[in-house]
Image (cartoon, rainbow, N blue to C red; front, side):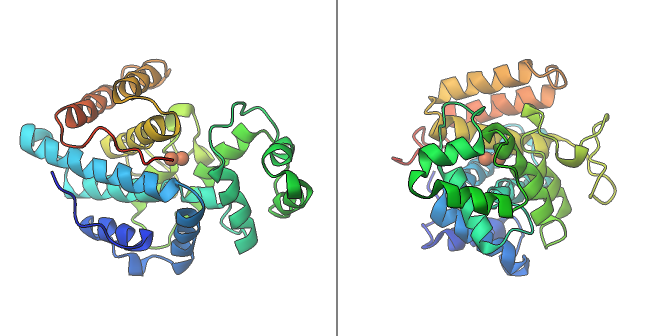
Length: 281
Ligand SMILES: [Fe+2]
Ligand SMILES: [Fe+2]
């Protein structure tokens, strides 16, 4: 199946994907779009999200064709695609970060496959940015953040930053929830958005449910990370996703998750999408 012709810049590609889901990027806060530009030039984040969104569209077509009763509604599709595109925007730092602070954080996220997430941010700068580590520590502090925190704590902050950045800025609220909860499987739950039942109580009008679209956003993000960042094969990535859900105290019996993983597996196995999605990076 051929994709649409490649658009020139990351922004144009993003516009095209958003438009197919009914989101006009012109209506999104320009500051958010600037962050997307920064991430596109600094990190792999935007390309990862684009691939995940492409894959989402193929999953919709697959369900529509093979299991029509389970097809995704247009609201669900919009939630998945837009949630996927914006889920990692928090990798550009806190909502109130200066342009310099945004760049600092984006450059930190650009360093991938760090063997030990327990290492402190200060030590990370010392190893990966040796020539100007102390200046980066200063800039990190200027964001109100503690360089003694571990890298794992730092990485986990991006979900809450995503939530802060997207709230009320032209991105549909369902997609904001989906984006902000995209690391729920790792128990990253910004501002306890996800309560004891399956509603997202905070920040969302009429408390959107945590349902199939939000789960697909999580799975697509993790699948792309497994393939590109961790160099897993397709089969390994699918097995890893199943294990993650099986091992989760809350979601271990969640049939939505398992059938979505089956769907993802089937879409790729059936050749709806080439197996080698990874760029040489
Ligand atoms: Fe993420
Ligand atoms: Fe991600």
